[in-house]
Length: 410
Ligand SMILES: [Fe+2]
Image 1 (cartoon, rainbow, N blue to C red):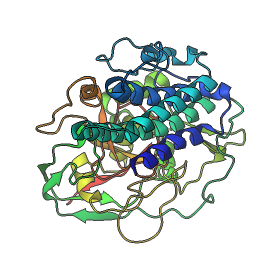
Image 2 (spheres, rainbow, N blue to C red):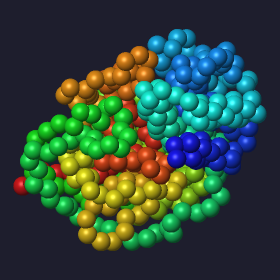
Image 3 (tube, rainbow, N blue to C red):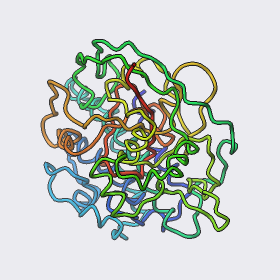
C-alpha cells in the first residue's frame, strides 16, 4: 500500500534524527550542508507545496512563512530563505517542525483515502513517489551533513556509538574485469520509479574496457600520498592543482595524524584508526582523477559504469563503507561509496523537463558538475539502481565518494 510506504519513509527520517540533540539539529557547518531540522522541514514542505497546495480542498498552509523558509531552490515557487543562512533559523524549533511533519502526514493520508477522479489519483500517486524519493535523497544528505557538522568539534562526537567492520582486514589486490563494450542501452528501463535525468533510455557506443572489481582502498590511497601525490603537479587537472594548492590539502577529508604519527579517520562512529582495507572515501573528483592518473588508469565514463552495473545486485550499506569480500565479479558497486565518473552531468539526448516548478528538480543543474554512480553506505534501502545519476561539483567531498578505476583494453 502506498500509504504504508509513505509512513515508512517519513518515519525513517525521524529515526535518523533520533540520536541527535535539538542543538545538533539546528546547526549548519557550511553553505553546502543543511541543518537536520531544515531537512526535516523541507521534505515536508515538498509534500505541502507540490501536492496539498494544488490538490487539497480548502488548502491552508500549516504556516504561511514556511513556504519561503523551506523552499530550497524552486524559483517557480517564489522567494527562498538564503541557503547559507539556514543555520540561523532558531525558529521554528524542533517541536514545531515535528508538528509540521505530523500535520502534513495526516493531510496526505486524508487526501489519499478520499474520493479522487482517476486522473487526479494518477497525479497524486506520481507526486507521492517523487516526494518519497526526494525525502530519501535528503536522508542521505542528512547523514553526510551531520558528519560534516560533528567533524568540526575537537570532541569528535559519534553519531552512532557502535563499531564498524573489524579493522586491519586483508585488502584485496586490484583485479580487473573485461567488458566487450559495443552499442549499449543506457538509461532507465521498466515501470519502476526513476528521476527525469535517467531518461530517455538511448543507445551509446562503449569501446572495450576494463573495470577494477573493487574500490580503491585507504591503503592504496595512502601509497599515493606517501609517493608525494598531493605535491606532484602533473598528476592533477589544472583546476584541481589550484584547488589543492589554495587549500593546502594533503589528504582526504576527515583524515588526520595523531600525536604518535598514526593516521586516523573521522567516521559517523567517531575518530577511528585508519583501516587500510576499507575503501578510501570523501574524495573530490580532482583527487579521484589524480589518483587514477598516478595508478596508470582512469575514471570510468558513466556509460561504462552503467553497462557494467546492469544486473548487479544492489547492496545496502551501513554508515561507513566496508571492505570488499573475496569472490569473482564486481564488488562494492552499491552501498559503499559513490563512484566518480569522468562524465559531465549533461542531459541525455531527447531529455525533457517536467512542466512547472517541478521541472527545476534536476535539469537546471546540468552545468559544471560531474556524475557519480552507484550508491553509498548512507543511501537508504530501495533508493539505488544501475541507471541512477548522482552529481556534484568537482571539488565536493563531503559525500561518501570514492574511486573505481577503469582502463583501456590493451
Ligand atoms: Fe530537496
